[in-house]
Image (cartoon, rainbow, N blue to C red; front, side):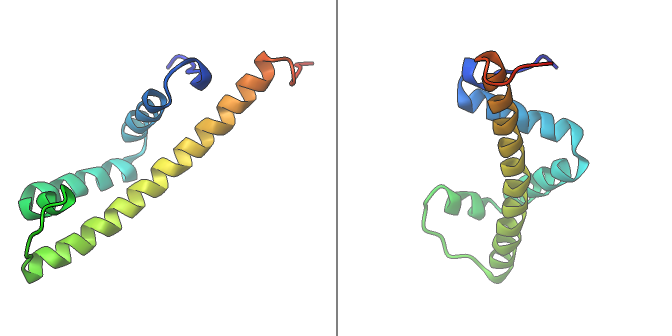
Length: 104
C-alpha cells in the first residue's frame, strides 16, 4: 500500500481507506461488520429507526436493536483506534517534512 499523507488528501478519504484496510486485515473487525449487516438485513425495522423513522418494535427487534448497538460500539472502538494511529503517523510525517524532526 502506498503511503497516504493525510495533509495531502481529504480527511474522509483517508479514514475510509483505513476502514477498508481494517476489514482486509482484521478478522474480528470484519466479523463484527458482517454481524451488523446481517442483523440490519434480517430486521428491516431497525434500519428504519436508524433513518429517524418512528417504529414500534416487538420484543425480538428490541433485543436485536440492543445487540446492534453493542456491535456498533465495538466497531467504533476499532475505527477510533485506527483514526488515532493515523493521526499520529501523519503528524510524524508532517513534522519530518517541515524539518521539525530530523533524521540522523
